[in-house]
Length: 447
Ligand SMILES: C[S@@+](CC[C@H](N)C(=O)[O-])C[C@H]1O[C@@H](n2cnc3c(N)ncnc32)[C@H](O)[C@@H]1O
Ligand code: SF4
Image 1 (cartoon, rainbow, N blue to C red):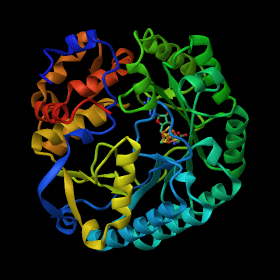
Image 2: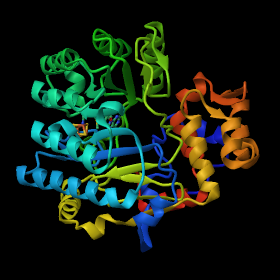
Image 3: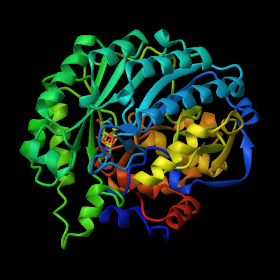
Image 4: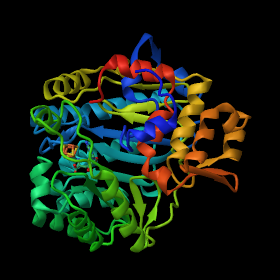
């Protein structure tokens, strides 16, 4: 993959290159020359505000669009062994991390609410006992799909101090759900939201997708209105990406022509609609309601490192090394990885075998991508404090943003404009280094 000539060239190819939710992308990870013991690695980190992420790679279905690390309808025995392995990994991390404080906990997937109430309780209890997370005082969230939302599971989450439940909906239109190849019934969605509301979680997030075949401006706004009827504190709007190895990706290969790409128009309509409803845009995908509670927990800043990922496929971020286990999308490879995870012994959990070393320049790129793509933007002062220099000197390519109307530099912040936010999925990949770009290209097409 040669480096693009300029941002203007890339913009001309459209806004939807790739979602930059972390940098570097896991496709740039490689087997490390020698496995790195985790204890000295974490001993060198600031451990005052860590983030614990527990990955649950199980779902009731495999949606046609989804390229996340997850498998549908696993054997019950495998699920229980997975929970046991997670607890084992937490016990190992207790020794590895030494003195630390967790500022956040998240259970993601896949579908964490695929687990039984007892299994959820086991994980939360282990997070408290082994990771030392004060559950009632620490912001924590869980992802759910509608058909897995039961009063029993919610009761466990509530009792364990969960304050954010994120529900994947995608669309309220039956024909759009068929186009996404996700079996889902609206009464089940409505019942799930009502149950979450009744349980009294402070933050409800709903996920919707735009760019679905057959979706129109008015059908998208109707789905948004159906979501707004429940006054969610947060709403995520995801542009649809059809990736190889997914059900939709395989279908697309058999078609003669691709449907017209209406995502940018749909995005603009949806964004304006949400703003008119009083929601604030936090990033290209995230919108926050005026009634959303302020974040009262100890500060966790997404540009920072200190992510402790637990479970198969979960990534961990220290300042100089990002590491994870193996990753896959296809079922047989995913099952093999999950199988290897449940068989992992303590010694295996205490070292990193697969990852990416970030030098000083890569650390700067990471910081730029993480902060620029989210409001309020990239702070010159925060950069200077962290790196002792100015962001425009360190990364001169950032100067290309303003002349293209993609960012403004005011009040000490380099912040994306509305046009810049719309092109966030092009600006992120543009900031990728030549080295990471080459590793990703060697890995093959995005899955
Ligand atoms: C872990 S899932 C959410 C929880 C749960 N598994 C569910 O599906 O309801 C994360 C979200 O990512 C979004 N997503 C996943 N793959 C996507 C893709 N290819 N294009 C757009 N959005 C996608 C969906 O909105 C999905 O709800
Ligand atoms: S969208 Fe959610 S439920 Fe569907 S396969 Fe992906 S993680 Fe599982």
